[in-house]
Length: 138
Length: 134
Image (cartoon, rainbow over all chains, first blue to last red):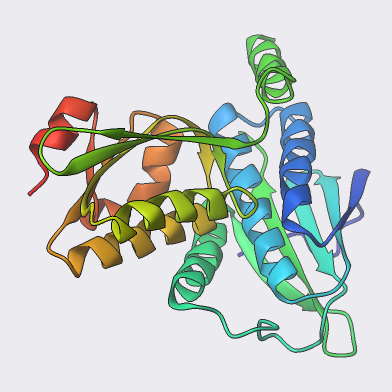
């Protein structure tokens, strides 16, 4: 929708994690703390937490060895950029099982349902950041 | 000010060392040929294989009517939902079913927005979930 993609960020919190499942919970906690700091409600914090986790699951499935989670406090909300350093192909590295495919579809669906906007932002060489935005509490 | 205080407490609680970011799975036999799977903790991309194994083992043993109790689950993501969907598909092949016990509003919300409330029977307590098994 109206993500402030080019507005200068006020405060930025960056987290770099290995692209491994066991580190996703750490990213969830960190992002929850950022959203809490920005005075989002408990329900909104849960939304952001789940959306970021889904983005990380998606990034891990693409391979690579690390993922950056960049939280930017912008005047009207919180923008979160999930940047992985995996293969440029948008397809998963391995063929997913039926369960995994269903879960993958649910993941993207959940991100779109829980955040105010989500988009892929190309950054060259076929790679793209997943950029999500949650509007500040009114 | 009240909002700040509440959200701060929330964050500290989530980071409390007494609440490990893991999942606990306990399986109990129930009346008839059904079983109850008690879950606690967080079901995510890291912990969901443990749940998948537990459900898979039950189905392999011929248990096709399950109640999965999510009352003590604080968090579930799409990989956890995928495991539940996979389990439901498998038991349905044998005429069974999976009912869930869930009272956490945030988790119920996830089932709502994904439409899974139309797929699973979701109940407020274990007795009701067991009674509703076909």
